[in-house]
View 1 (cartoon, rainbow, N blue to C red):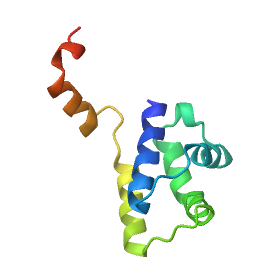
View 2: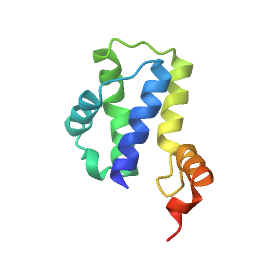
View 3: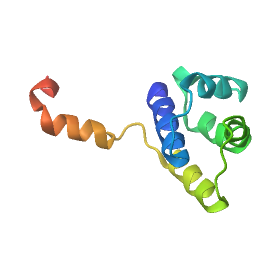
Length: 101
């Protein structure tokens, strides 16, 4: 589940900034915040959002309005890695034969 959290963090932060951020920089920021990008859980994501997200945004030279920042934080913290992402649902609809097991 950890990689799903990492992929979600990367996608949500990139969408909020309207540009792609470096996966490597995000990876390092998560390590610096005490998390393991390959084994992220809700506790580590919460700690990252509270302690390191602001620093990552500054390092990326990104500015988010307070409301946009709160919206991003809510999306990051509400993520359920057990639920399929919209992309996974679409892939299943378009290619059901790949998912038959």
